[in-house]
Amino acid sequence: MQAQRKAAKSSNIQLHRAPRPEYVAAIRYPDGRRDMFHIRNADNFADARELVISEVGDVLSVMIALRH
Image (cartoon, rainbow, N blue to C red; front, side, top):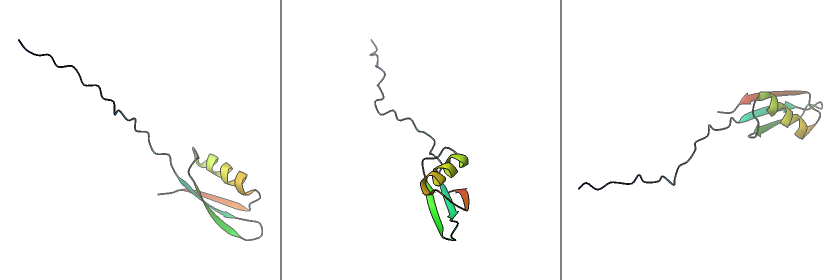
């Protein structure tokens, strides 16, 4: 008689999500000062831009790029 094996339950199943993109923002204030920000909680470029502007307020320019 052959023994039957029960399928082992895999309790360590991990779902791998795609890593969220990280962005870097270079900003220039109206008075000429400059600053850099790293954004981790943005879904896209537009969201990253809005996060930066909401954080710092009045800016002259914002440049957003993907961080590698």
